Amino acid sequence: VGDLLKVELLNLGPLAGDEWGFTGTFHKDNGGGFLTDHFPEATKACWDFEGIYCKSRNIPGVRFAGLIHPGLIGTAPSHELLAMWNEREGALVASEGTPQAPTLCGVLHTRPLACLPTPEGAMLGKLGHVSAMKGDSEWARVAGEAARTVPGRENGGNCDIKNLSRGCAVYFPVFVKGANLSMGDMHFSQGDGEVSFCGAIEMSGFLELKCTVIKGGMKLLPAVGPSPLSVNPIFEIGPLEPRYSEYLVFEGISVDETGRQHYLDATVAYKRAVLNCIKYLANFGYTEEQVYLLLSCCPCEGRIS
Image 1 (spheres, rainbow, N blue to C red):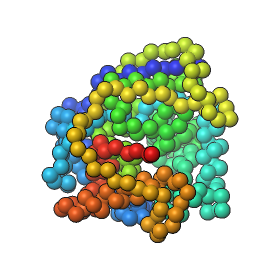
Image 2: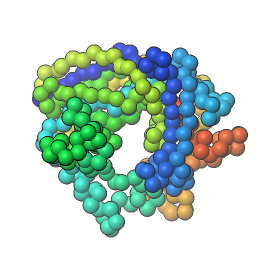
Image 3: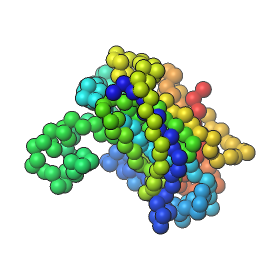
Image 4: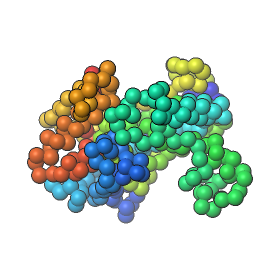
């Protein structure tokens, strides 16, 4: 506790014999995505891997090099940190439908504002899945406190950083004895923002790591918040990335589709940039749904400036 865990990514890739993946959007009644108000239906594209490249029968004529990375990697929270998460995320959910609700809800078809602990569908590692543990009081107690892994938090978690590939190192804070490092959600490729939500190329894969403990190193992380636990990992990105010589850049501004001006709202601006790109590329033989999936999984860049 109080240390840093340096995690170096040495090698990663798809499991042998399982060289394929998929990209999808959720139906609006099943969580949706960034543009659910424009694309409410569920869709999917399957991808076949050829070395570092991939192509899809569902988006023909497209082939690109991916950056394989774990979407989710992090250490375990302490009881104190877990309580912080549940308190602040519970307050966010409680604001829904009130004047205090985030203004973003007015311009995006949002998923629940936060995923609070619930036994429903819970998978608790060695403690087991809800399907086999119904009626177990200890399992239910843990499921009622355990954090869902959808958002990234102080421990790392679901960071979905597309450049977190071979040659990278991450410096994670250690909140409990043993750190309890975990990882998963392997992606063959992802665009910045993973805009369709289930939008990377999801795959089964392997990951080889080197871990080093830096004693007392957590004090090197800046604590920005009400607690000494209000820290975040530092990501040291490696030298590998696809090389492209030409780019198209689509600008977005802080004005929603109704013409309403927002004040420095980066999410609204990003949404407009994505919509501008989708509607432009749909002029060249692809449906808007195909372009939406492609932007979510190809290694496109997103910038806020």
